[in-house]
Amino acid sequence: MNQPVQPRFKLELSAEQYEQLLASVSERLAAFVNGIGEQPAWQPEELADSRLETLPEQGSPLEHVLDRFFAGAMPGGRFGTSPRYLAYVPGGGLPQAAVAELLASTVNRFTGLRTAAPGLAAIESSVMSWLKQMIGFPSSSVGALLSGGSLANWSAVIAARERFWPRREGDLSQARLYLSDQAHECNFKAARLAGFPESCLRVIASDKQSRVRVDLLEDAIRADRAAGHKPCFVVGNAGNVNAGAVDNLATLAEICARHQLWFHVDAAYGGFFALTERGRVILNGMSLADSVTLDPHKGLFLPFGTGAILLRDAGSLAAAQSIEADYLPGLSTQGDFDPCQLTPELSRPFRAIRLWLPISLYGIAAWREALDEKLDLAQSAHSVLSALPGSEIVAAPDLSLFAWRRGDRDESSNRAMLARLNATGRVHLSSTTVHGQFYLRLIALNFRTHREHVEEALAAIRAAWE
Image 1 (cartoon, helix red, strand yellow):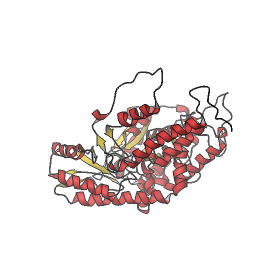
Image 2 (tube, rainbow, N blue to C red):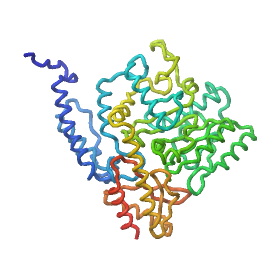
Image 3 (tube, rainbow, N blue to C red):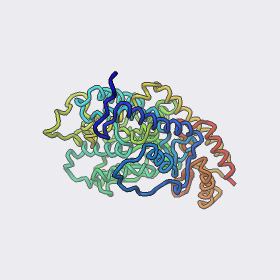
Image 4 (cartoon, one colour):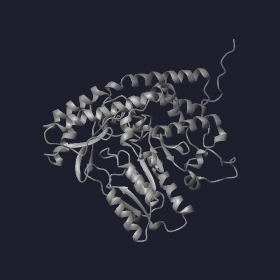
């Protein structure tokens, strides 16, 4: 019988050592997943072991290292995996996607170029096709997987800049980009990083429901053009970060078409609700955009670091991003672009497997059912909160997020109520400011969050109301 070959070097594991490593880690992770139902939604930061570690010359036993992670580093802060975490948008982190990440990281294939891993490239092309289908984008469009919405929104601005100012020829200071006062801050950062001066940004006021005022937008476009400026880019919100409102995307698409502007939809939070019948109605007009930002680590419940950009015509983005080098093989010039032609990354993780494996296992119907449930949870929570004495809500939830407060109390009283709600760590909510007023926020977008968890949060809110 052949004896297992022991590696000559510590970094090279034998099959037996690898199995032992996986078994130890799997045991810890299984216990973690099993305990998520009772996991706190928040803990004081002081509970974390935040000491700065020195560079070790020699290693430590695996169990000691795992103890440092689970018992030392994990406590403290916010726990988005908790079903009672109702504070911020990303939630859950499918363990199935983590298993997919293990596969990708272990085989460790390079996916910046299609020729380097053609089979994996085919999986990525399939995944991009699925994303297009989910939101009703044309099959002729293209896209890329990125780290998240910030980089995706930047990619859209870069593509628009290339369309209007190829290779940045011309005076960018005359450009005008239009964003709602409810747009996510990363859209403003994206414009700055793309080289547009602050004076190029036009912030358009939103209405009482936190949707951009299309009348003021069109007035601003006409006024800027009359003044000799060059309007070029409009951002629509498919679920804004403060109150969850969806702009009138169909009207924005019509305005942009009439004025020949680039229409971008930031659907990082809300885009995947298009999988549901109600969501498709609310998000009407999203499929007419020139570009759409999506965050699968939000609406598809995947681990952090999984974002996407879809573009109706990738030519301008490829022109801005693509570059040749003698040491690289020939880049794709027909059909699908190489990923490195659409993103700043040449070396990149194989993100597509995070979507491909779970969706292949369960089918998209499982996500449709989960997202429908989140819409129901938000509606029921809104019904309860709107009936409380003195309750003031920015708007009924378009999707699964809304902002509310005691309108008959001052800001300090509302802040104190939030502090009482979060003090136990059992439930975690967040806050924001809309039109100068302090509000609390509630969002249901964790695949583990169900009716009993929202009802527990509502009971806590009732108790803290007085």
